[in-house]
Length: 183
Image (cartoon, rainbow, N blue to C red; front, side, top):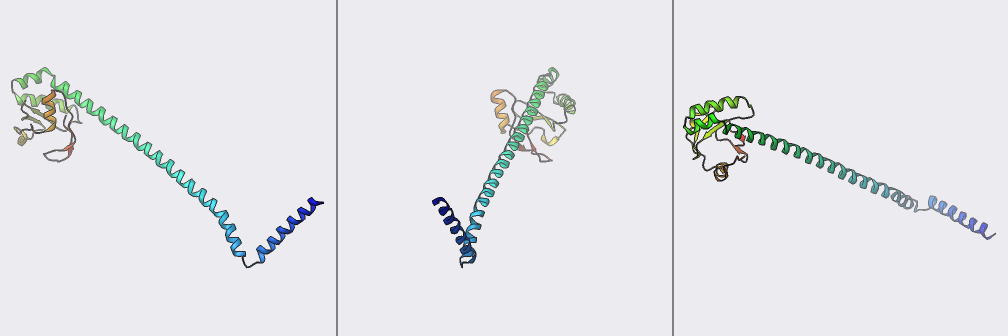
């Protein structure tokens, strides 16, 4: 009997609460509180989902950019290594060594002109003496002959170690003034 009485009390409480909720002057307050209680978790979950998705997409993009940068770096490194090997191969040709030792710069220039035509990636080739004075240029640029380049960083490194050197990127002094790398 006590259980039935307790259930009836609860049901009466809910009925009175519902009647008060619908008929009282505070109906808008109750509805607003109810609406806010429903809305806050939905907004919170939406914001958290947005932040999580944004972070995931950003991380993914950074990983893609990092992989692309690594690929570009590796490709450039391999191409520069190949050009260094080409330069070493050319510098070790007995005929070129003979012309340079005899200071026959025109024959040496003709020899590197033929070599350069085989490799279109090479924009310009210069022959220097041991004092970094330009003695030959392919393609021919007469005003460049006898200019001294001893102040360049790459020349200092070559003279110190007598090993191939890849310079930093710099803007070429002659036309067209493009960014180049000296090897």
